[in-house]
Length: 231
Ligand SMILES: [Ca+2]
Image (cartoon, rainbow, N blue to C red):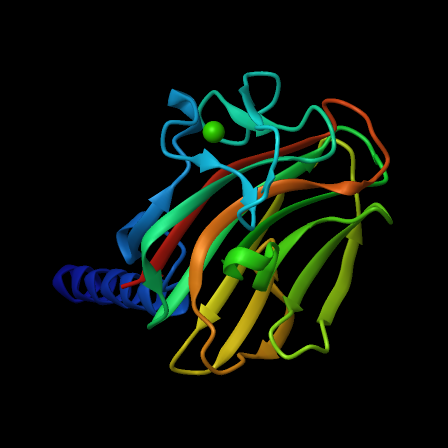
């Protein structure tokens, strides 16, 4: 009888492990192949100057211990028209890509702050494509997709939730090339999906606060930014 009980417990344990792996393929580091992580605890050495096209250069964000989700630092904006970016040396355009990050606002600030994956348009400035999530000037957490490639300047945004002061939103933008699908998630739940346009590829990861919207320092924070593929 005792042996039978042990066998059941072992079986249940194996089943639990297997269910955990299948139901949460990207939930832990063991199931991730990391492409990039922010390393804010050691400054901005992994990041590049933010440029929107070749002509426009933003002021930098800065790391701070004033608020953080993980470790000891995050990045914060001091004004509009500031940002940092990570340029990838080769295109990210295959498989299943996740960009996960945490966003927090000390207060509703009526400004635009976003983490996004994008493809710059080269000499004309701006982006060809952008997939992101952030706080809009309407003080809502929102999903965003911009496509400037076909002349129609298609812009898709979806409001998800009002800013909750001092609340870290867990955000994720998934670009699944085989499934031709983009998925936005907030706190692990699907917030929005769109079909993926053909020929889209990613060249940069950006965190920026736009030129539009109300001014004001120390409102918006981003932390624990990880780009990865599920294993
Ligand atoms: Ca951190």
